Amino acid sequence: MNILVISQQYWPETWRITDTCEELVARGHTVTLICGLPNDSRGHVLPEYHKKENLEQVHNGVHIFRIKDCGRYHGDLCLYLKYVSFVRGCRRLLRKLPGKFDVVFVNQLSPVLQAIPAIEYSKKHNLSVLMYCQDLWPESLSARGITNHGFTKPIYDHYLKVSRTIYQSMFRILVTSPLYVDYLVKTCLVRPDKIGLLMQFAEPLFFKKSSVDLHGSRVHNFVFAGNVGKAQDVETLIKASALLVKDKRIAIHIVGDGSDLTEVKRLVKKLCLDNVVFHGRVPLSEMPTVYAGADALVITLSPVFFTSLVVPAKLTAYMAAGKPIIGACNGSTSELIKRSRCGECVASGDYRGLAALIQSFSNMSKEELLTYSNHGREYAKGNFDRRNYFDALEKELILVAKKINQ
Image 1: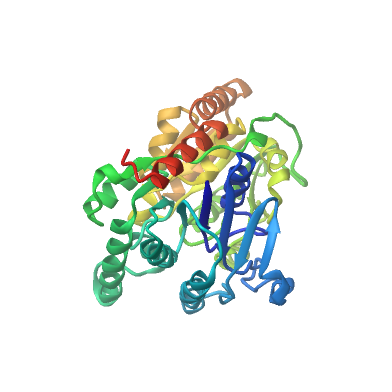
Image 2 (image 1 turned 90 degrees about the vertical axis):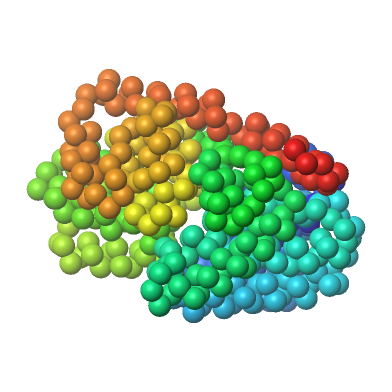
């Protein structure tokens, strides 16, 4: 197949869509991708991508066209400008893009707006669009304070209308969490037969066992890894850390970067915490080693309704790494942790309960911790296998290209 992929996020930033496109190439397909300019951890466009010659590249077999969108920076206005500039640039590029495609694939993280050029292109060329929906609009806007009530209601209502039009225009939508189906049907009025479940896979490298001691570690180490943003609610973990500061056996490690990192560091400084260690962004290849040094891995999510629908990709990695999982989260994530018996959870925002869980896990025997670890790894092996994921995705792409309803 000749596949056109639209994803505002792509390599050299660490997004899973990069692996997806390269695997499709490895399976014999031709992949052309339209994406935005890569940003550094502060949201600035990487300097080398200011050069015109880097706007079109071939990387690991994927033909990449880059749109000169705005930098991410910080703040809602910059983020909005980035979203809008990508849509406008993508429209212009698609008018002159060479090649005849069999199917259009939209990798839908934020924003859902990036699907608009895909819809327009597909109508013009009589193609069908497959969307991989990993971020529900307009619900995800609630993490940025835009909700269905108060003075932000008109903004919410506008994006509800836009989102409904976009989702309903898809030939097929794959979702990463069972609760996404209910939301798309009830809120965005999408026909249930258009929607399929394709949960994210665990990277194979996380199944490989390794051992390490975290630098400067105490006796018991608890690791939070991944994006540090509003939705991840790391503030709850920091508040829990404040209740544990007198226990000199326990260290909390924050591994990652994100829009809320500065605020989180400021809170740690304000509370004078010496039990929280920041490691910054770590390459994916080194993450199994980081996980290996942990007694347990921590996942926190904001109490807003949207995050209760989500199953973050890092949860599959946590489980594959074979470490107990401690959560302060609601909905799908909490249910999965309980169903797999890989750890324990309290409600989102419950920092006192989270502190009590961390304290409890620090007092467990190795045998007790190993029971959680084994449950998580076995569940990941049975449900988050990489090959099964790509077999399912490839099948979906073929059926959508043939315009066959599943």
